[in-house]
Image (cartoon, rainbow, N blue to C red):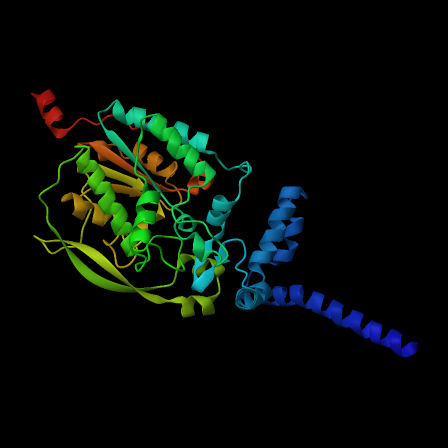
Length: 391
């Protein structure tokens, strides 16, 4: 009996020692760095629920023990249990999927607080179309498919869904836009048809949430063809060449795991096609007073603003049109933030004939700042009009 009590006391002392060692070590590190003791922050603010939650998050974020152990724990969780947490979902053949995008694709539910609906997006898009039409500018809406919509079989070998599936909310928005007379480019059908004809080229990156160089080029050429077929713009006379460039890249979903070892192991070479002007041999650059303005999110940023540069959707759209375009790109902000940026840059609407508006389908529910109605900027007189007024 006495030996049992002694063992229990030793376990209790060991357990308490472990618990106390964490704040003790944190305090030693903070004092050596010359920082204030973060544990005492609880006495510096009024004890409200919001302040207590902020205090708790601060302790978690700044904990040296947590920072040291978190990568190991996350690596074990992913490597042994195939669990990537909320943001990363492990599919078949090493494919990774973005958690919120998968939720959007699979969950039939009302949006949570702070999320939006297809009806919200529909109202904002129609409002934007009407503002543009009042200035004689056309609008083409280009929803970019979630990766899950094009490669559902990579989620599970038991899955039998065909590529090109539309979620309920995406279907509601697309059909609503079509009934309202808004021009929509159906990339779902295009990508699915391309896969059925030949599945040898991946249209999306295996460990990234975005389309591949082949996917973005296919989308850009389809947009250019639609603009020309509707006589919104004419094919230009600027010739662009292609320069092959290979970049070493780990997918953005791998980065979300925040495990350096996984990031190092996931780096893969990706062959990109940079767009180069044939006359100057310079990399493609936007032109502010072009006829076409492109608004979009990270699907336009990848390979365009990222390495190798000038190899993304925007550059390939310009090449297919035979003329430079102008663009506003904001990661996750295609629903509202790009239009707010346009409101602050009125000169971008000069000489415009058409606006191409791309957004990834999951942002129907998850777009940053939702789907606000944003006014166009005040009209800016052209140089010719200013000259005539001066006379």
